[in-house]
Length: 75
Image (cartoon, rainbow, N blue to C red):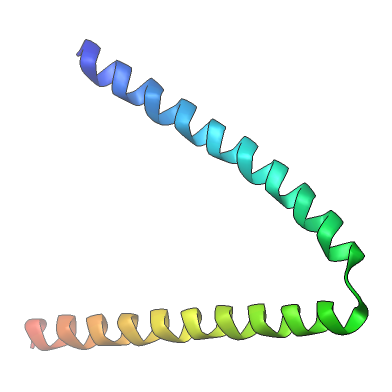
C-alpha cells in the first residue's frame, strides 16, 4: 500500500517537472521564432505541418487496420 502511494506521488511530480521544462522550452522557441525571417518561419511551419499530417495519416491507417481486425474477429 505504501509503495503504491510512493509510486503515485513520483508519477505526479515527474509530470509537473516535465511541464515546467516544456514551458521554458516554448519561451526559448518563441524568441528564436521571432528572430527568424518571414521566409524561414514559413519554411519551418510548412515542414511542421507536413510532419503532423504524416503522423495523422499513420494513425488513421493503424486505426483502420485495427478496425478491420476487430470486425473479422467478430464475424
